[in-house]
Length: 130
Image: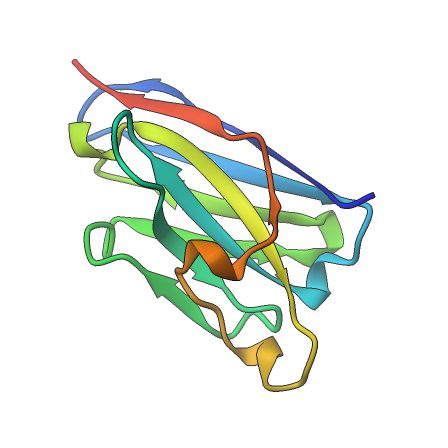
């Protein structure tokens, strides 16, 4: 059974850093693109970053470019989201999601589109506040 478990969230002051982890089980992580999404109270879920199954393509929302970095360690079945220079606007529940790469072409792409992903974790809360 495919399962994704996020961890690493918490309370941090503005300007601080956190590293989120997305641990995968029940499937071969290297065959999936992984996306990080977030949802703040009263707002729609939005894409933050994604990484292709092959690992060579990453995408970031404009609001986090230069501050967040996504990476994957297939040997550990884990995807990471390093978040630096955090701002109060980054406060949200963060989710990771998986999309199977069913073709060679698909292994090289990823999209920050919620409906692209059909396997989701339960989320981890990130709160940025002084």
